[in-house]
Length: 277
Image (cartoon, rainbow, N blue to C red; front, side, top):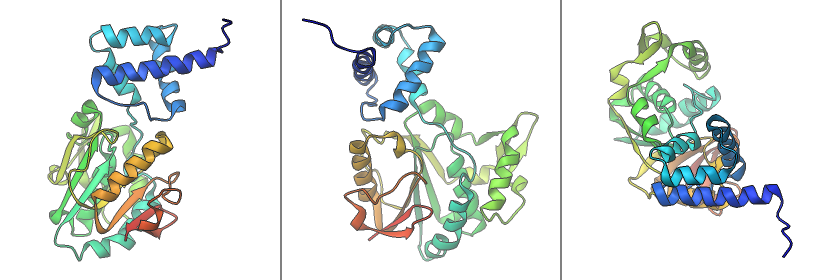
């Protein structure tokens, strides 16, 4: 029989086998992530490790101790910053905070929290609005190494100028420098900002709901998921929200194409904030 597979088709098969191997070895399931994202990260790892074919990477996943953890770190999405998209946090402060003030307690879930900057931003915002003491922030990610870093509340000093700009544009009410101390390399968030934040591992692909929340933040994460996985995660969030709770997704994400679109109010269409009906 004549072999008619192209190079691209062979690579697609190899990536499927690689993702299956990662799942079998580690339990982490990337099989429903967007292939374009996975392929870029696989190619980068191949360059770094001087691997000619993806099949060689599969062998290393199966037989080389610690290699699967290296790939898990590669696949983890760690793009974040303090008060990222300042207009979102400004809208949150103006439109949602007055409603939160009516609640006896506030539970917030930051799903896919990476190194914690979004959760830290929320802590500062709530503190300035007099809400932090009655709030509990759950910050989750699939990457344990990232979470161990996040819970320390350490930020790179060379990012603080841009973080300060974001904070001011988001409607910050204090001097941003009041929230941290520094040395020659890092900024260290005040411990008072960390006390009501709980960091722990949670995989959106395989793990279920663990509480009922007033706010769920999952911004710029689901763009890396296939449509099928987005549907699954959206149902997870819906089941995890209290009645009239808020779901915030990224600027490139929407619920309008979701089967759950009629179960939410389009609370702020510009900032992609939805309210459960």
